[in-house]
Length: 352
Image (cartoon, helix red, strand yellow):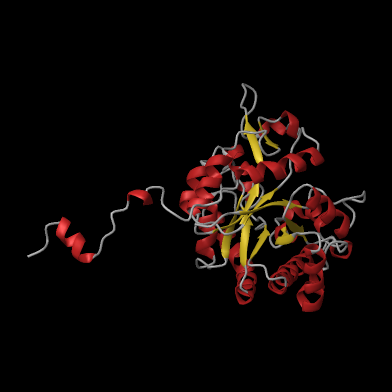
């Protein structure tokens, strides 16, 4: 077993134009001051990382690592959640998702997809140059708007959608494989990979590619009423990244899992700061330790109530207190009798 690394923090929800969240140096100083040991790095803001340069220049990547290390921090993973989303976009969402791409690509879905795929390939090489072995992203979606079968879905629609999704991701997965990096899909509403069944459909579409792995975030499963503990038992061999994000589900006589188009604060299912929701993190950390998870515990702050800076400060301590330093001995070693093959045969009555 391996002791989980952490605490770490996903920077995406903190980056802004205000200090200390407006530069790499400032945000590293802030994170280190709260007790974080790692940062998960989004890759679309060049104030923090130039993704293409990190892919093409080992010197740049080394300098970036050195700057971060000077604050006592490590990069846990790079994140391309927004670029991964753009690998597969249904036309119904074109205008909304254009916001994730450079302005010159707006209204050009084909060019936008090509840009996203190239971004993913840069992320593979950048991760290699930075010495990382896991990468966080989204799958994108061609089918999400059809998840509830009304009107009835045409026969073969889902199969066709996953075949196309697999076709788009195979070259990217192969690039990551060449770089020795796992692609960790965050299983998430709005993506075609939103639960275990859809993940397995995707695996089939990419021939069980060894780099098609998972980012485990239990908060999304609370909102779906999925057994997030059993999920670890089923998929632990594929879980290579971990978001510590809490959630709660409080159904009423007026709304349930779909939320009634209400704001996050007024939904039955809502995200909370670590420790403020219903997720059983004690069991999760135990399960991940049991299954020898070798990655980081990364806090993702998404809370509809608590201030982000309070959430970060409390989250660092929350993760620290949940990390289990795994044992290097069995608790009953004191009673070991010691044996060898001959002794075992003797007590089994197998000797002549």
